[in-house]
Image (tube, rainbow, N blue to C red; front, side, top):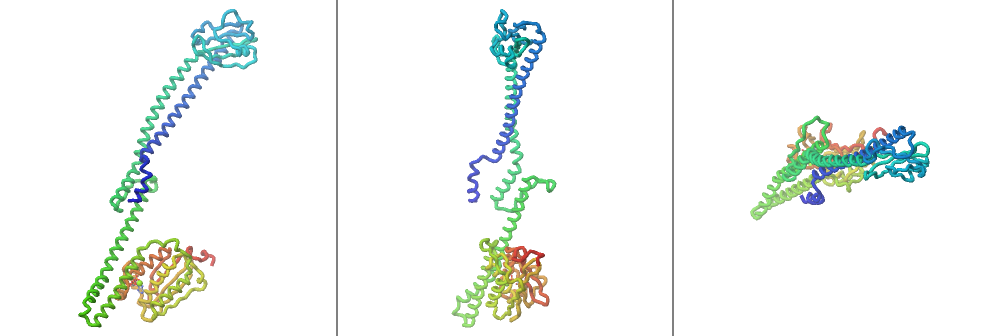
Length: 475
Ligand SMILES: Nc1ncnc2c1ncn2[C@@H]1O[C@H](COP(=O)(O)OP(=O)(O)O)[C@@H](O)[C@H]1O
Ligand SMILES: [Mg+2]
């Protein structure tokens, strides 16, 4: 919980994901709406201005066609309102040639230059009778220019109206975007909300049996959230299993501890009344007490060992298999002086290594060797062998005891499992469980077999890609 609170701190200051998504979606759509409206406005203004200039050009052409023989002066009868037909006049290059009356449109030096043919035709903004207008000045015949003008304020009004309408449309677009953003975030995030709710429920109840409901659909076509929920469910399943396994271990352990602890207490109580016992009885009781204490100690140590997880990476090193085996057998000889241990390393395997934690691998081997000695007839031989069959590196431990019955073979690696015949011998039934756990942590396989000719055979197999062997096919 504390970890969650720590990790949650930077999040709490931010808005909820739903709000952020709604804001982002609305902002994106709004930006597009505003952008489109602005672009439309620019295009409309340009198109209307362009249309006006086209009209002016056409009017100028018409005026020139209709006034081939007319001299300088105002051509149109009505220039007060500047409505179609355009107000037009003909201007000479030389002001001395001007007619006596005044012009309707302003005559500038630039217009005279166009008349003289020294300047290209041009458009300009003018004010005529108080109206804003657009004027075209273009060269005409023999040293004259034609000037035509049309009102520009109608165009400006149209542009203003278009701007107003576009602003209204854009505003509506922004509002719609906000609504859409809200809707998108609501519907888009509802599976996330369900996922969050499920995770929070599990965190609150600590019950890993919860599962997130997955929407029914064709398999292989799920969306990301469904896949996330599915992997979340898988994770929950594994969590549930590991919690159940831990519970089982604790239950089994307390059950297994009960018997030796009861025997211990009985003997301890017996010794408390030592004054009423004969010397022989006292010796027996104290010997039993010592043995039971050792058993409980072994059991507890094995349990601690079993509860360990993966091998800690920093301790992993390249272990020479031959040396490891020699070492383990030497230790077993110390524990079981009567047993005849033999070691054989196949030629070419002396230098081969496996990645692992030496102490743990030694523990694995000593479990196998102890079992072999324990179940062998007194003085019976135990053979340990290191070989390199194709694709692997193998260590086998074989004894000549009673072997393992077929019905026991599938169970010998279970925790606390001991075959009927083994229950009179000391042991906890945890040794092989631990051995297999160590093997798995080293990516190796550990299996039990019935040896040909009697006895048990344990086979520890490291796959080739984890050993110092050359790759397959180079032998
Ligand atoms: N070498 C062996 N020969 C015969 N039976 C064996 C041998 N090794 C293991 N077993 C059987 O597997 C069981 C589990 O072994 P293990 O986990 O080491 O427990 P423990 O040695 O404490 O009994 C033993 O109780 C025994 O029944
Ligand atoms: Mg054992």
